[in-house]
Amino acid sequence: MKRRYRQILFGHRPYWWVHETVIYPNQSSPCLEQFPITCETGPGSPSGHAMGSSCVWYVMVTAALSYTVRWKDKSAVTLHRLTWSLLWSIFWIIQISVCISRVFIATHFPHQVILGVFAGILVAEAFEHAPAIQTASLRTYIKTNLFLFIFALGFYLVLKLLDIDLLWSVPKAKKWCANPDWINIDTTPFAGLVRNLGALFGLGLGINSEMFIASCKGKNSCKISFRILCIAASLATLQLYNVVKIPTHTECLFYILSFCKSAAMPLTVVALVPYCVHSLMRTTEKKLN
Ligand SMILES: O=P(O)(O)OC[C@H]1O[C@@H](O)[C@H](O)[C@@H](O)[C@@H]1O
Image (cartoon, rainbow, N blue to C red; front, side):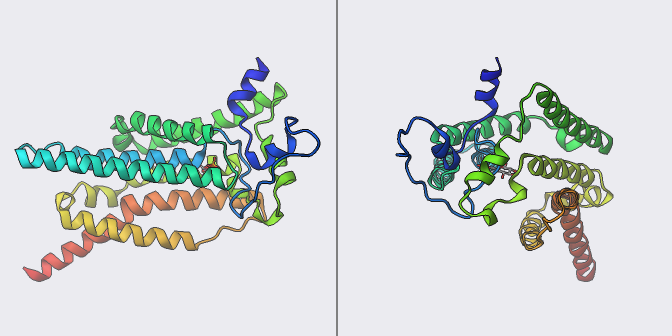
């Protein structure tokens, strides 16, 4: 039983596996080149990058196609088919590129990235059809956040009691990474958890804020100019967040700041940016009248 758990939750990464496996006799293991982004510290299966990429792109492609599918006349149907082929081709080119790059830098075996792509699509499918995400109250968001945190921590502790350490991969990464500077705390499973909890909290805060209601639920929200300005301003602002580097020397401080940064990002995109754009458009309209 324990062995089976290990197979599901404990995917090895090639950069440490080649050193530990016994299938290569007499030190004949292949030499895998490592890169600054090779030394991921979490388990290898499924690939988080492949999962994130396929999930996000799947949502964007299906959302775009849901507009074109409404076009009814004959030439529009042809255009829809062309858009369909183009967008899905782009989708698969991106997924294949992500998968190849993860395998190339020795962080994953091929089956792990394939699993990641399909897991990401499954997650996107499940949540795309859950409109409650856009209408849930802040209280529900906070409860969900607490539940996920307690469940993850509890699951970790229960497995620890069963002598299964979910952080088993961290010492392996530390042992086999070619350069200690390439081991980043933000790749640990707990860092991922804190980031996701922060993003969920920020989203809940955003969609329940006055700023969101005034802008995204107001009369401007249907205007294409409002949407394009929001997209442009959000992309520019998100770049600024990339510049903010969180100090990694104190673990606790890192987790707190990481939570805050992850919460600030959806809050900015969902509430702050639309509200600023909305206010700007209203001021311009008033001046013109
Ligand atoms: O499994 P991969 O492709 O190496 O990706 C790992 C990354 O996956 C992401 O989903 C996590 O948020 C990161 O914390 C983690 O570093």
